Length: 548
Image (tube, rainbow, N blue to C red; front, side, top):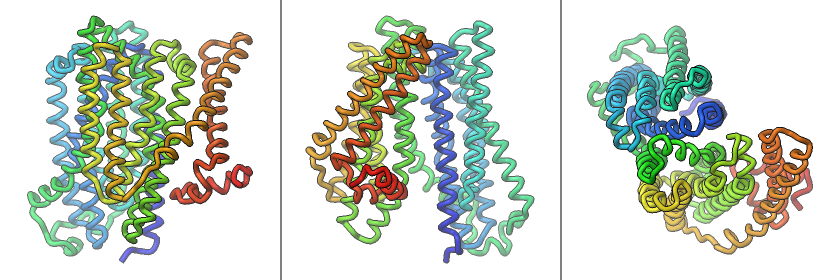
């Protein structure tokens, strides 16, 4: 039986962790802007080549153990035990430390081979710098899993924020020092990647502090032996058996996380070689790759929002499935897809229209604006892919979204091979759009079969067209008016571009919201069906007299 207040504790923990994740991702996304501004496009290109690979290696090194730790500890806590939890964290910590050391050594000493596989030797110093993070990050995440098992999300939240703040601070310190010293792009990028190791160390120190506090408080059986009274709730398992049970749970989680990383990794292992063979040379290839990645931070803000919102729909759909209400399942799926399609397309069109002032405001010049306009439409594909995957998970279908992401990664790599030699980085941007929409289409097709979902093309495509067109016109007009006015006043070009971007975004957003409500793209009833946020938003719109 659950203790009173358990549900509220879970909700509170989820809220705390959600806020921390949003802040952490926001810091991680926005840190790319000073990286490009201070280091230039070549450093930006090297960093964006290595970082997806670093993320993949971290994922493999973790092997899903943090989630397994959280599950096994939660089971032990539910039965009132503690000793098995301590055995779980000891075994997992040992495995994660060994894994981190092995993978860290493999990356450090194998960096020249990885650079050859990528097709650009300039990434070798950055790869070696990233390897040091593997000394700290695996153990840190294992300890996070331990506290999450007790529904205590605060240690994870605090360590995430500390990790990101220290990572960005160290990165900027190295950027300032190395650029002022006239270091090469390879060395500057390596300095920036050392921030990941510093952040990992900071996060581990925070988690170590929480662990010491846990031990000092003398939690039940925190200092007991494995065979004493606190451990009798579950049959005693050998260390080897417990390790195997954890692996059985952890490996599928690891494979699912790998699928997400592989989509970004397709660029790492194709674009530098293709750009180099196209005549750009090693240094030129990194510059081009840096320009290609200029639009990514803005799009990642949209995908971050989509990921945060998608979490709301999983329990709502799982609840509908548990009650066997097929009509409610179909309605919630249809509503969710329409919401995310509208949000994704509005964001994509807005970024595309405002691409030039956004580019100048963030990166000082308009180089690569056309590529940003293409990259913008990955926001719509990503939003659909994220929500459709969440809906499938809510229905208990976990493996298929990962397989669909693998198919998207393969399509991305193939399209890069076909389009980059012909169109350069514009071809890679087109390939990204196609890959994300492919993942979304595969998810939606499976969702339609599973939930008995019928999607009307007219309502999904034709009806929003007028609203989106009005939004684009409003954003463009406001941008041009603000730019003309501020230029006439002699405002600095970068500040004028930032103001024009904000003016365009505000005007476009207002027209989109007003148009969506007035044309009943989303009715009040549908709005109130959105978990957690729907009812308050509907009440706000009614107070503003935007709902009839």
